[in-house]
Length: 267
Image (cartoon, rainbow, N blue to C red):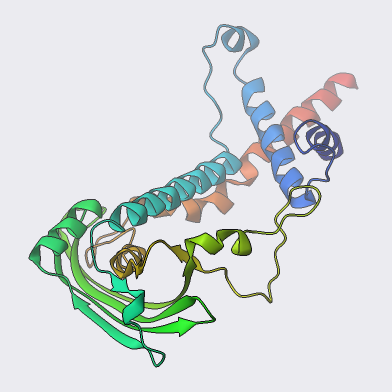
Protein backbone atom coordinates (compact mmCIF):
# COMPACT_ATOMS: atom_id res chain seq x y z
CA UNK A 1 0.00 0.00 0.00
CA UNK A 2 2.82 2.41 0.85
CA UNK A 3 4.42 2.02 -2.60
CA UNK A 4 1.08 2.52 -4.37
CA UNK A 5 0.26 5.62 -2.31
CA UNK A 6 3.73 7.01 -2.85
CA UNK A 7 3.62 6.67 -6.63
CA UNK A 8 0.06 8.05 -6.82
CA UNK A 9 0.80 11.03 -4.59
CA UNK A 10 4.09 11.75 -6.36
CA UNK A 11 2.29 11.77 -9.72
CA UNK A 12 -0.86 13.70 -8.79
CA UNK A 13 0.30 16.02 -6.01
CA UNK A 14 4.04 16.51 -6.28
CA UNK A 15 4.35 16.68 -10.07
CA UNK A 16 6.44 13.53 -10.24
CA UNK A 17 8.87 14.43 -7.44
CA UNK A 18 9.62 11.69 -4.92
CA UNK A 19 7.77 11.75 -1.59
CA UNK A 20 9.75 11.08 1.64
CA UNK A 21 9.39 7.47 2.82
CA UNK A 22 8.55 8.49 6.39
CA UNK A 23 5.75 10.75 5.20
CA UNK A 24 4.27 8.04 3.00
CA UNK A 25 4.57 5.43 5.75
CA UNK A 26 2.61 7.68 8.10
CA UNK A 27 -0.06 8.22 5.45
CA UNK A 28 -0.28 4.48 4.77
CA UNK A 29 -0.67 3.83 8.51
CA UNK A 30 -3.48 6.34 8.67
CA UNK A 31 -5.28 4.83 5.67
CA UNK A 32 -5.02 1.31 7.11
CA UNK A 33 -6.32 2.42 10.49
CA UNK A 34 -9.15 4.41 8.91
CA UNK A 35 -10.25 1.50 6.69
CA UNK A 36 -10.19 -0.88 9.65
CA UNK A 37 -12.35 1.46 11.73
CA UNK A 38 -14.86 2.18 8.98
CA UNK A 39 -15.14 -1.53 8.12
CA UNK A 40 -16.73 -2.16 11.50
CA UNK A 41 -19.40 0.52 11.14
CA UNK A 42 -21.56 -1.04 8.44
CA UNK A 43 -21.85 -0.24 4.75
CA UNK A 44 -25.43 1.04 5.03
CA UNK A 45 -24.50 3.63 7.65
CA UNK A 46 -21.50 4.77 5.63
CA UNK A 47 -23.56 5.15 2.44
CA UNK A 48 -26.21 7.09 4.38
CA UNK A 49 -23.56 9.34 5.85
CA UNK A 50 -24.32 8.16 9.39
CA UNK A 51 -20.84 7.14 10.41
CA UNK A 52 -18.22 8.30 12.87
CA UNK A 53 -14.88 9.34 11.45
CA UNK A 54 -12.21 7.31 13.23
CA UNK A 55 -10.14 9.11 15.85
CA UNK A 56 -6.87 7.28 15.14
CA UNK A 57 -3.55 8.07 16.74
CA UNK A 58 -2.27 9.35 13.41
CA UNK A 59 -5.31 11.60 13.18
CA UNK A 60 -4.62 12.95 16.65
CA UNK A 61 -1.05 13.75 15.69
CA UNK A 62 -2.23 15.47 12.50
CA UNK A 63 -4.78 17.61 14.35
CA UNK A 64 -2.21 18.55 17.00
CA UNK A 65 0.17 19.63 14.24
CA UNK A 66 -2.61 21.70 12.65
CA UNK A 67 -3.31 23.40 15.99
CA UNK A 68 0.39 24.24 16.38
CA UNK A 69 0.43 25.65 12.84
CA UNK A 70 -2.61 27.80 13.59
CA UNK A 71 -0.94 29.04 16.80
CA UNK A 72 2.16 30.01 14.79
CA UNK A 73 -0.02 31.81 12.26
CA UNK A 74 -1.82 33.69 15.04
CA UNK A 75 1.56 34.66 16.50
CA UNK A 76 2.67 36.14 13.18
CA UNK A 77 -0.58 38.15 12.97
CA UNK A 78 -0.01 39.49 16.49
CA UNK A 79 3.58 40.46 15.65
CA UNK A 80 2.37 42.28 12.54
CA UNK A 81 -0.28 44.20 14.48
CA UNK A 82 2.14 45.05 17.29
CA UNK A 83 4.50 46.66 14.79
CA UNK A 84 2.14 49.64 14.57
CA UNK A 85 1.85 50.16 18.33
CA UNK A 86 5.06 52.16 18.79
CA UNK A 87 5.99 55.18 16.72
CA UNK A 88 9.67 55.32 17.59
CA UNK A 89 11.89 56.37 14.67
CA UNK A 90 15.60 56.98 14.18
CA UNK A 91 16.54 59.48 11.44
CA UNK A 92 19.36 57.94 9.42
CA UNK A 93 21.15 61.26 8.95
CA UNK A 94 21.51 61.45 12.75
CA UNK A 95 23.52 58.21 12.94
CA UNK A 96 27.25 59.03 13.16
CA UNK A 97 29.95 56.63 11.91
CA UNK A 98 30.54 55.41 15.47
CA UNK A 99 26.85 54.71 15.97
CA UNK A 100 24.20 56.04 18.33
CA UNK A 101 22.41 54.60 21.36
CA UNK A 102 18.63 54.38 21.13
CA UNK A 103 16.92 53.94 24.51
CA UNK A 104 13.18 54.13 24.95
CA UNK A 105 10.65 53.23 27.63
CA UNK A 106 7.02 52.81 26.57
CA UNK A 107 4.68 55.34 28.14
CA UNK A 108 1.19 54.58 29.42
CA UNK A 109 -0.52 55.10 26.05
CA UNK A 110 2.04 52.94 24.24
CA UNK A 111 1.72 50.16 26.81
CA UNK A 112 -2.06 50.29 26.38
CA UNK A 113 -1.72 49.84 22.62
CA UNK A 114 0.63 46.87 23.08
CA UNK A 115 -1.78 45.42 25.60
CA UNK A 116 -4.65 45.66 23.13
CA UNK A 117 -2.98 44.26 20.02
CA UNK A 118 -1.28 41.43 21.94
CA UNK A 119 -4.39 40.54 23.96
CA UNK A 120 -2.73 41.02 27.34
CA UNK A 121 -4.23 41.90 30.70
CA UNK A 122 -1.56 44.52 31.38
CA UNK A 123 1.86 45.73 30.26
CA UNK A 124 3.66 46.81 33.41
CA UNK A 125 6.91 47.81 31.71
CA UNK A 126 8.39 47.76 28.22
CA UNK A 127 11.86 49.02 27.29
CA UNK A 128 14.15 48.92 24.27
CA UNK A 129 17.91 49.53 24.38
CA UNK A 130 19.65 49.49 21.00
CA UNK A 131 22.88 50.57 19.40
CA UNK A 132 22.42 51.69 15.80
CA UNK A 133 25.47 51.80 13.52
CA UNK A 134 26.11 52.23 9.79
CA UNK A 135 26.30 48.88 7.97
CA UNK A 136 28.01 48.49 4.64
CA UNK A 137 27.58 51.58 2.47
CA UNK A 138 23.88 52.40 2.77
CA UNK A 139 22.50 50.18 5.52
CA UNK A 140 22.36 50.12 9.31
CA UNK A 141 22.63 47.51 12.02
CA UNK A 142 20.46 47.51 15.13
CA UNK A 143 21.66 45.50 18.12
CA UNK A 144 20.37 45.39 21.68
CA UNK A 145 17.54 44.04 23.80
CA UNK A 146 13.83 44.39 24.35
CA UNK A 147 12.61 43.71 27.88
CA UNK A 148 9.21 43.92 29.52
CA UNK A 149 6.97 42.76 32.33
CA UNK A 150 3.45 41.79 31.37
CA UNK A 151 0.36 40.15 32.83
CA UNK A 152 -1.32 37.46 30.73
CA UNK A 153 -4.39 35.32 31.30
CA UNK A 154 -3.72 31.68 32.18
CA UNK A 155 -4.82 29.49 29.26
CA UNK A 156 -6.48 27.07 31.70
CA UNK A 157 -7.92 29.08 34.59
CA UNK A 158 -7.83 32.62 33.09
CA UNK A 159 -6.27 33.93 36.29
CA UNK A 160 -3.57 36.64 35.89
CA UNK A 161 -0.03 35.39 35.24
CA UNK A 162 2.95 37.73 35.46
CA UNK A 163 5.58 37.08 32.79
CA UNK A 164 8.93 38.55 31.76
CA UNK A 165 10.02 39.32 28.19
CA UNK A 166 13.75 39.50 27.42
CA UNK A 167 14.67 39.29 23.73
CA UNK A 168 18.02 39.89 22.05
CA UNK A 169 17.87 41.89 18.82
CA UNK A 170 20.39 41.84 15.98
CA UNK A 171 18.88 43.09 12.71
CA UNK A 172 20.30 44.70 9.59
CA UNK A 173 18.42 47.33 7.55
CA UNK A 174 18.88 48.36 3.92
CA UNK A 175 17.08 51.02 1.85
CA UNK A 176 13.90 49.80 0.17
CA UNK A 177 15.27 51.01 -3.16
CA UNK A 178 17.80 48.17 -2.94
CA UNK A 179 15.12 45.48 -2.58
CA UNK A 180 16.05 43.85 -5.91
CA UNK A 181 19.61 43.42 -4.70
CA UNK A 182 18.45 41.39 -1.71
CA UNK A 183 15.64 39.50 -3.43
CA UNK A 184 15.71 35.73 -2.88
CA UNK A 185 17.53 33.89 -5.63
CA UNK A 186 15.50 31.24 -7.48
CA UNK A 187 16.73 28.28 -9.49
CA UNK A 188 15.40 27.31 -12.93
CA UNK A 189 12.50 25.42 -11.33
CA UNK A 190 11.44 28.43 -9.30
CA UNK A 191 12.71 26.96 -6.04
CA UNK A 192 14.38 29.26 -3.49
CA UNK A 193 18.13 28.74 -3.29
CA UNK A 194 19.13 28.47 0.35
CA UNK A 195 22.73 29.04 1.33
CA UNK A 196 23.21 28.08 5.01
CA UNK A 197 26.53 29.93 5.05
CA UNK A 198 25.09 33.22 3.79
CA UNK A 199 23.91 35.93 6.17
CA UNK A 200 20.20 36.68 6.50
CA UNK A 201 18.91 39.35 4.12
CA UNK A 202 18.30 42.71 5.78
CA UNK A 203 14.97 44.29 6.58
CA UNK A 204 14.07 47.24 4.40
CA UNK A 205 13.36 50.82 5.42
CA UNK A 206 11.71 53.59 3.46
CA UNK A 207 12.46 57.28 3.52
CA UNK A 208 15.03 58.81 5.83
CA UNK A 209 14.28 56.99 9.10
CA UNK A 210 14.30 53.48 10.57
CA UNK A 211 11.08 52.34 12.25
CA UNK A 212 12.75 51.27 15.48
CA UNK A 213 9.40 51.14 17.31
CA UNK A 214 8.08 48.54 14.89
CA UNK A 215 11.18 46.43 15.41
CA UNK A 216 10.91 46.68 19.21
CA UNK A 217 7.20 45.83 19.17
CA UNK A 218 7.74 42.77 16.98
CA UNK A 219 10.38 41.37 19.33
CA UNK A 220 8.15 42.20 22.29
CA UNK A 221 5.36 40.10 20.74
CA UNK A 222 7.85 37.36 19.83
CA UNK A 223 8.93 37.08 23.46
CA UNK A 224 5.44 36.54 24.86
CA UNK A 225 4.52 33.11 26.19
CA UNK A 226 1.87 31.70 23.79
CA UNK A 227 0.52 29.37 26.52
CA UNK A 228 0.85 31.13 29.90
CA UNK A 229 -0.13 28.95 32.86
CA UNK A 230 -0.61 29.83 36.48
CA UNK A 231 1.56 27.97 38.98
CA UNK A 232 0.15 24.55 39.85
CA UNK A 233 -2.43 24.55 37.05
CA UNK A 234 -2.43 21.45 34.83
CA UNK A 235 -3.28 21.64 31.15
CA UNK A 236 -5.47 18.61 30.36
CA UNK A 237 -4.96 19.00 26.62
CA UNK A 238 -1.30 18.07 27.06
CA UNK A 239 -2.27 14.49 27.91
CA UNK A 240 -3.20 13.82 24.29
CA UNK A 241 0.42 13.73 23.17
CA UNK A 242 1.35 11.44 26.05
CA UNK A 243 -1.31 8.89 25.10
CA UNK A 244 -0.60 8.85 21.36
CA UNK A 245 2.00 6.10 21.64
CA UNK A 246 -0.29 4.03 23.89
CA UNK A 247 -3.17 4.28 21.41
CA UNK A 248 -1.04 3.72 18.32
CA UNK A 249 -1.45 -0.07 18.21
CA UNK A 250 -5.23 -0.11 18.72
CA UNK A 251 -6.13 0.39 14.99
CA UNK A 252 -3.54 -2.20 13.94
CA UNK A 253 -4.97 -4.71 16.39
CA UNK A 254 -8.35 -4.31 14.67
CA UNK A 255 -6.77 -4.66 11.24
CA UNK A 256 -4.89 -7.78 12.29
CA UNK A 257 -8.10 -9.36 13.63
CA UNK A 258 -9.88 -8.63 10.33
CA UNK A 259 -7.09 -10.21 8.28
CA UNK A 260 -7.02 -13.31 10.49
CA UNK A 261 -10.80 -13.65 10.21
CA UNK A 262 -10.59 -13.49 6.41
CA UNK A 263 -7.90 -16.21 6.39
CA UNK A 264 -10.10 -18.45 8.52
CA UNK A 265 -13.05 -17.92 6.17
CA UNK A 266 -10.87 -18.77 3.22
CA UNK A 267 -9.75 -21.99 4.83
